[in-house]
Image 1 (cartoon, rainbow, N blue to C red):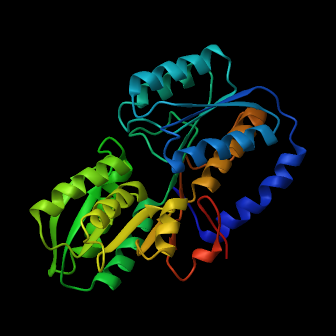
Image 2: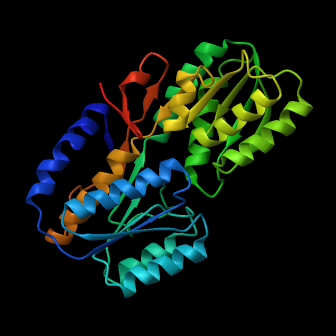
Length: 315
């Protein structure tokens, strides 16, 4: 497994225009994301599409919204349309194995982004955030603000996505060292702002004292913030997010969210297409390691001015 540090991420971002200028490839690259209504997945699809077009390909973006049946139909369409490669954010760690295998057996290389599947050797590459590193980064920041004695809530993402458990486990590895931190609720909100809002409303009713919230992503955190504000309970509550979305950065600037952990989705979405282009032209992987981890970055009130674009933090 290969890891990409901040320096490597910046180098990758800088190198793209040089690579794009020399490419003369043709054909279709099919990009399948989860749900572009979420700014994270919107950015994932748009960056991949723009990169493919810069490299000379036609590119389409479609969404499965977490439905493996829809995902299977989209893979079938990519095969029928003769795609040269597929960039896929898998719907399910187990349930997407079959569609990746189907595309591979049809002769179409698959490059996974953002989420992994529970089988190696089928996809050419799996490019994801270093979720364990990002979770530890966020949890250390969260604990430094919350202290050693607090009642808190955790929001958990979609259980079908391995990232949800990886982040939660990363949080718990850090926070379990502080016995005075009491988790009064852990709720599954499936990465969704509305679900975060609704779950937080119920938690507030059952728990009159809540000092902090730690969330598996920004959308759930933003939903929790909205519920806390509505109940007049946001003041003094430490809320930590994960993704580095534009709305989350605005919330950090406004003092409503303490921090967010930025996933370099703009970098690895671009990198996936570059690697696909290399494979199409050379018939072999650009990077030997199938699973590639990209380190996350911490966004706090001190560095929000370095947020230069969606999911992009400059030095």
